[in-house]
Amino acid sequence: MEAIAFYVLAVLAVASAIVVIVHRNPVMSALALAVNLVTIAGFYLVLRAQFVALLQVIVYAGAILVLIVFVIMLLNLREELKARSPGTFQKWLGPILALVFAVVLGRAMLAHAAPSFPAPVPGFGTAAALGIDLFSRFYYPFEVVSLLLVVAMVGAVLLAKRRL
Amino acid sequence: MTVSDLVFDVIVSLVKIGAVIAVLFTVVSIMTWVERRLSGLIQFRWGPNRVGPLGLFQPIADGVKFLMKEEIVPAEAHKPAYVLAPAMALVPALCAFAVIPFGPTVEAFGRKVPFAIVDIDGGILFAFAASSLGVFAIITAGWASRNKYALMGGLRSSAQMISYELALALSVIGVLLVSGTLRPMAIVERQAGWFWNWNAFAGGWQILGFLVFMIAGFAETNRAPFDLPEAESELVAGYHTEYSSMKFAMFFMSEYINMTTSAAMAVTLFLGGWQLGFPVPFSGWPLWALQVAAFWAKVGALLLFFVWVRWTLPRFRYDHLMNLGWKGLFPLSLANVMLTAVLAALGWVRR
Amino acid sequence: MEPRLVLAVSAVLFTLGVLGVLLRRGAITILMSVELMLNAANLAFIAFSRQAGTAEGQIYVFFVMTLAAAEAAVGLAIVIALFRLKGTTDVDEVSLLKW
Image (tube, rainbow over all chains, first blue to last red; front, side, top):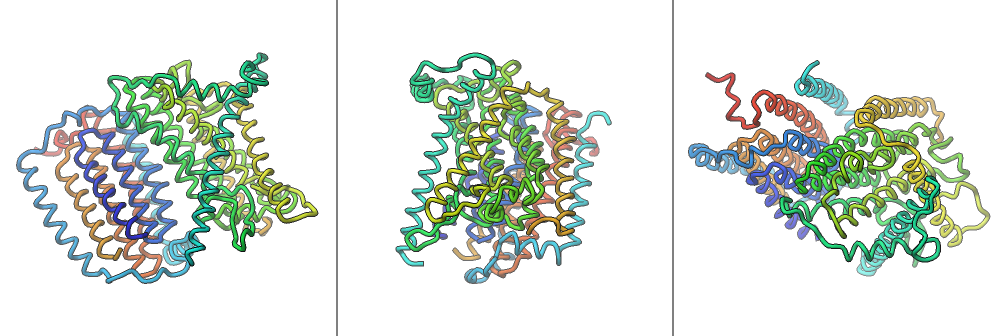
C-alpha cells in the first residue's frame, strides 16, 4: 500500500519537476511546481511526518507559490515564451556538471541510508512532538528565524516599492 | 488490524463521504434558491416563484439549463489550463469538509465511529491547507481565459486571498491556545454543556477571534462586500467571464461549498460544533441525531447571515479592502492572540 | 519502500533543480528551480528523520520552509525591481556590474 503510493508519487514528482525546468511558459512551470510541492507533501505523509506535510501545503503551495504566480502575472511575462535557448556551451556543460553533481550527492546520501525504516515511534510527526522540541531545544534558532522573516519583509518592501 | 476491521472502515468511510457530498450539494442547491428569495425580500421584489411551490424547484431548472448550454472555449485560451481550472476549484472545496465533525463519536457494531469523514490530529491545518489551494483555480481560470477582465479578476483574488488568509489563520490561534489541540473533534468536545461554554463566549473568550474569522471568511470566499474578483460593474464577471455551461456551474458550486465550509469551520471552532448548548435528559441515538441536527442548524443560520450581509452592504473599493485586511483585521487578530495568551497564563480560561 | 529509494528521488529532484538553474535564463524560472532544490533537501531531511525516529529532521524542514518564504519574498522583489529597470527578467541582460 505504502509502496504503491510511493512509486506513484515518485513518478509524479520527477515528471512535474521536469515540466518546471523545461516548459517555456512560466505560468505552466508554476502550476507544475504546484503539483511537485503537493507530491512532496504526499512523500511526507508516506514517511509519517503528517504535521510537516500539512505545513508544506499551507506554506509552499498556499503562500510561496501564489506569490510567484502573482508576480508572473503582474509582470505579464511574455518574453520567456520567446526567450533564447541556452547557448551551446551552456547546453552541453550544464547537464554534464549536473550529472557529476548527482553522482556525488547520491553517493554521499546513500552512504548513510539504513536498509529499511524502523517501526514508527508513537507520536512521531505530530504537532505536539514537534512543538515541544521546537520551543525547548530549538528555541534560539526559532527566534533568529523570526528575526530573519522581519528582515526579509523589510527588504522586500524596500526593493519593490517605487518610491518610499 | 484484521480484515473485517479494514472492510468495516472502508465501508463506513465510503458511506460518510457519500453522505457528506450529497448533503453539501443539497445545501448548495437550496442556497441558490434561498439567496435569490432573500435578496428579493431585501430588495422588495419577488425573486424566483414560478417553478414549483414558492419557486422551490428553481435549482433543478437551473441545473438542467446548465447542462443544456453550449460549452464555449475561447479561441485564444490556453486550453489545458482553461479546462482544468473549474475542477481545481471544486476539488479543494470538497476536500476541506473532510475534517469537520458534524456529530459525536458513537458506538456502532461494537466499534467507535466518529461523525466526521476523518478524525485526524492536524485536522484544522488540513482544512486550511485545502482552502489555500482554492486560489490556484481562480488564478488559472483568469490567466487561461486570455481576457483582460478575467486576468484582473484573477490578480485581485490572489492578492485578496493571500492578505486575508493571514487574519483568518491568526484568528484561529486563540481557539487553539485555549483548546490545546489541533483535532476538530477534541475542540468540539471541550465546548460541552451550556451554550456559554462555547469558545466564542465564556468557553474561551474568543468573541474577537470569531468576528475576525467571519469577516476574513467573507473575503476568503469572495463574497459579500468583498466580491471584488467578480465585481460585475468593473470586471464583467471577473475570473469566470469566459466560462459557460457546466464549467461555470462548477465555479458557482465551489463558491457555495466554500461558503458552507467556512460556516461549518466557524461553528466547529467558535460555536460549539455539534454541541446542543443545553443539557438534555436523554442519551443514545436520539441525542446524537439531535446533535447532528444542531450542527446543521447552526451552519444554516450562519449561511443565512452570509446572504443577509451580501445583500445589505455595498462592495468595498480595492484599496479599502487591502487597508481593512492589513491594518484592521491583521493587528486585531494579533491582539486577540496576545489577549488569549495572557488570559490562559492567568488561568482565567477554562481548561 | 526503503530509505535508499526516498533518498534517490530526493537526489534526482535536486539535480533537476540544479539543471534548471544552469540552463534557464528567466529569473522566475530560476527561482522556481531553487524552490525545487530546497524541497528535495527537505525530502532528504524527512527521510533521515523517519530513519532516526527523532523530530530534529522535521524541525530543520520547518526552518528551511521559513527560509524559502524569505527567499521567495526578497527574490521576487528583486525580480520586480529588475523588470522596472530593464523591462525583462532575463538574467543575461543584467550585466551592469560586469565589464
